[in-house]
Image (cartoon, rainbow over all chains, first blue to last red; front, side, top):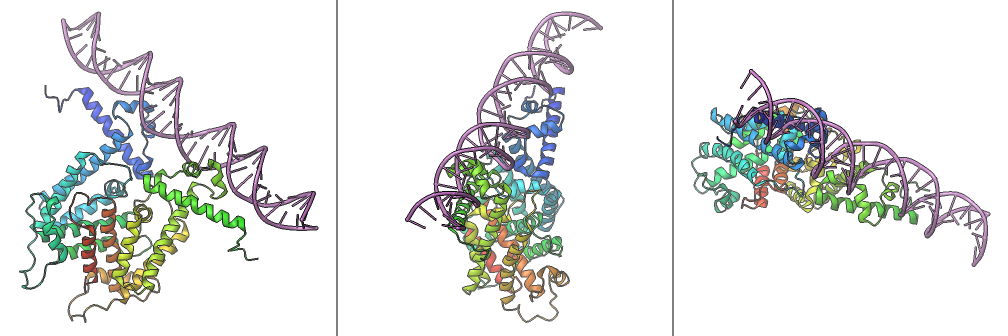
Length: 223
Length: 223
DNA sequence: TGTACATCAGTGAACGCGCGTTCACTGATGTAC
DNA sequence: TGTACATCAGTGAACGCGCGTTCACTGATGTAC
């Protein structure tokens, strides 16, 4: 009787085929980029006729939106699983890197160049929040910075965050933790996105060592 | 007699029209992203017929390549001008940020999500090198880190760079300077690209303050 | 267990679109004597 | 300064392509009695 989670053979088949479409979509994105995604091409690859897919997706846009949602969910789950396994901030960082390396175009679909017109559906911000909350938790869980040297002034941006912490909602993170979270996010994204985009090719160093070096800096007191 | 720089009226006109095409191309990219760039659409907007543009560009690919080249050149020139004005690393950072904010899609065309198949033409790596060299110069020009506390070990990644500095060619930068350059590049790219992609919207802090905070960290000894 | 009906997956044809690109041609602009 | 010729910008028609999407239809799968 439950409407959600109905499990007739037909519904199972539908869900299965939707998944297969998405698998092919990811393949196509990996090969030619997200802008080249085409319903007809996917159908052809699956041995179906073009219009068949309209039984499963309202159109190209819904498919892309679904892929974005899946990417967010996958990353959120990966980080949540790492956190549940007791990973600290360093563990989360490495989980993030692993996730990104596993499928660069999936990473870019979420954090890459935005298409000027595109507006992400409402519910993806909740998914993005889940990711940020997990990272923020780990930042807040770090041992607080050295017993405040009296007279050592807070970083100006940390002070600024104390006055602009609305976006963190009711999260009990200190301004310093918020600051560390933002540094964590932006620095690791910086290394990762340049690495994935191939901007380090031709340079002989190992990107994972640069990643670890940045991570080290983020874990240091005062970072 | 000089083949280059010939300046007949016709050649001036050609150059002028090529520029106009590129201006429209940038507008189109800013509105709908680089993947939506279309020669026909540009021609229409200029009041010309589609095939007319083939007098000026061999095709869509040559136009895009030319835009990439221009973007690289523009950034290289901007940084070189700042350096010539006596700007240090902080000044270069702010020049970079100004350049990126002036036209986000231009920034993304160079440092954004790569199209899987695309191979950048050979001469753009030389332009990318010019940019990196300017930044590397500024990193090398910083006062060297505090008189090495004896026993304070070098960061492992700095040591790694000492053994993998080929990409810096004959640049007389110390491994520490190379390391600082990479941190500079990746951290600022991290803040910038997330800001330009709109990932901070909804958070109430000022991105320029985060940028300055990261910059501060990069200028500190030991960063 | 068997028949009658409803549901739904998938097809093929079709529409309109915009794209990149080629080609033969017209008309204006510059050049040489 | 004037005429004859070459150069080149831009046009319009055309080709082939793949796209997203709609629609009427067939045939298989499930459901109810």
